[in-house]
Length: 294
Image 1: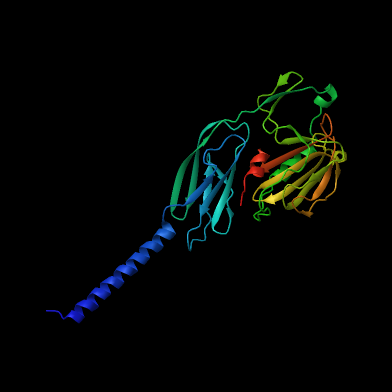
Image 2: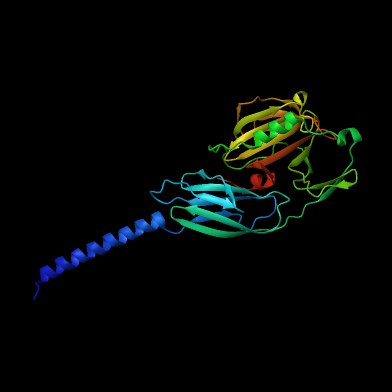
């Protein structure tokens, strides 16, 4: 018969073995376990931006891969997670979309349901001369290149702010019946602020000026314009300015004066067109102003 001391030693060794096995099991779970994530908003609407966070797995240095509707989405590193933005434009078809996450040796397939937003239809009368204006190739190329900018450094802090104290004259997503004709594919891609000529325009958030476009350089539609990169594929645009008070490559702070309201480009009067773009797509600016995107 085994002695009591021998039994105690045997039980201790068994306990140590169980602890080691359990610790190894936990490590495997951390490295290869189920993907932990957070989506906000869970039930998005047309025009909103979906923020997907994938919680980091300990000792796993690889980036997750994210696909929305079979299109790969850029992923950016935060302190405790990775994040991807999914921009839902105003004319995004409501319905169910597939969202795929691949991380480590695991994958997750989700169903993202996009619901309809109610956008107004506005009647707008333009002179034949103004209605016939078209963007120049130089303007199109500059805007296209600017909106394709995606940088890895997140420059913003706390909430975004409105760039003007003027009256909001046209909301995001509004359809326009121009001279009696409605284009079903068109929607207003930002917020318009009506204010006297020369009124201040402020940067909505910290960032870097990546484009200063002038009407004299061929910006016949947008007029004098400023575009600011805020990082992670988020860009703000300020159009129809009378004056531009910053230059390309300038680092600007939230609330800094960057220009003055005017009526350059296609404009029926002095106003600021303010747009927010995520991965090159125009989204609802108020979502970014109302939400705290850390």
